[in-house]
Length: 501
Image (cartoon, rainbow, N blue to C red; front, side):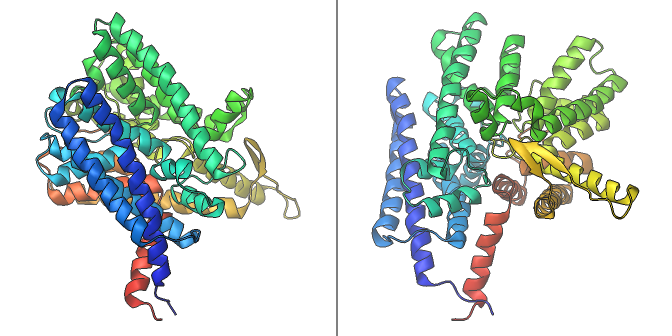
């Protein structure tokens, strides 16, 4: 028998959801400061209005739903899944007020794309965005990459068990430090240090490329936040094509790879364990899949003679491939070039790269390398069972920070999540085909949305049907949270309707 949720469940969920809103409202202070510094009164007002509304809603929930109870598993998962929807609706407010979006739905699309670190956009006239609004687009990627509830874990949550449940609900099930609150703070420390170093590198490169210091460092901080958090937004409508700079591309490749690495691996690298990067199953799997998918892409480009010079083929092909595999979505080609020049084989290589993604507990999306490695190890184990004598004891292990013996309890969730991702990609492609797009292009765009990548072959535009926009929003949301917290939310609603007291 299904039991109806107790009113105390709703109260607990609403209380912590209010804390998430307060945390989000505090982040809106940053673009207000930028608007003041750059003498942008209208954008400042946009963010002040949005922040005030966010604070009011959050304060009302905290005031009327105040509780001392910690979150249980169900409540923690629901808080996480709802937090991302709340972040989308509230984060879209200043974007919509900017006047650069046709509708509030379009602004919500960009907000979810930002928080989910996807990079698909429906913004108009990006080249004339205010500094404040442009920074906000990239700041929400920085927040989303670390995790919306990680902000709350860092500053507003005291209970360790409830914090862990929220942390797991956001598809981060690996603790780096002794507890998840310290883990959340370490994630922010890593991100802040890299932010300073990356901004300096990109800012100086921009100046050497002829940009004014003010613009060079503003672009530097925006590009870093989107690259490290494997997002894909850029301050200019031409994306990375705007810079026409090989050093800029090399630096962003390094940042994208750093963003696709497990935060736990970052910790061991910081602590001097540099050998871990060569032993870890995730980095091994990433190297192999990058090599294979790049070969597929390069062969496709070479067959069509798109880039006659080998150096240009490598530069264009490898950049798009790394951008796809790390889930970033930066492009040094126009979306129309994918459909008119690249050909089916090259796009297939990019689709595979997007679908696979980077490491678990990183800022990237997709199936993830650890799951791929576990499935491969399980396949090897089963082959050994067939080949070797029946009495042979088959022991399979892999290295992920430490040596781990492979068990069915690890293989089963890896396979389930992989299959759900594949279903998500195909479901989005079917919707895309329903609206008149060819299968390959529909699959490309669907995989980009579901794996939180942001590469586009041109389907994502302000004129696409509202139902397709909503489809991609749901894909970005589901792909970022890796499904489980969303399934719990759906189960909660079913129990509320059909459950018995």
